[in-house]
Image 1 (spheres, helix red, strand yellow):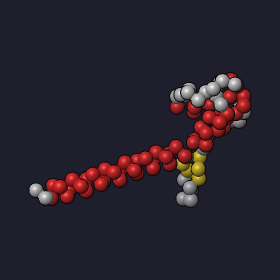
Image 2 (tube, one colour):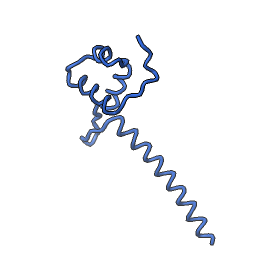
Image 3 (cartoon, one colour):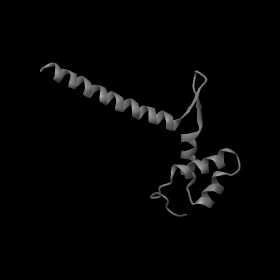
Image 4 (tube, helix red, strand yellow):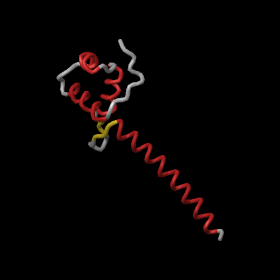
Amino acid sequence: MKNNSSKRYSTDFKERIVKLYLEGHRSMASLSREYDVTTGSISKWVKSIEPIKLSNGKQTNLTEIKDLIKENKRLKEENEILKLAAVLLGQR
């Protein structure tokens, strides 16, 4: 088996592989052989795209949750910068 650790795959490629798997057309093993991708990578891609049901009845996925966490962190940092700027401007 080849070492695929240094390969990078486009989002489009990942989505096509996951779609083939989720629609039941192909197994992870057959996709792995045909596209020279490890089954571990395919499994990771499936988990990141699979829907997660929320308590309010809506759905999301792991990728969206990770994006929201990153955005929340960025917004908190920006808020702290604005607070500091307000203090500095208030001293003038």
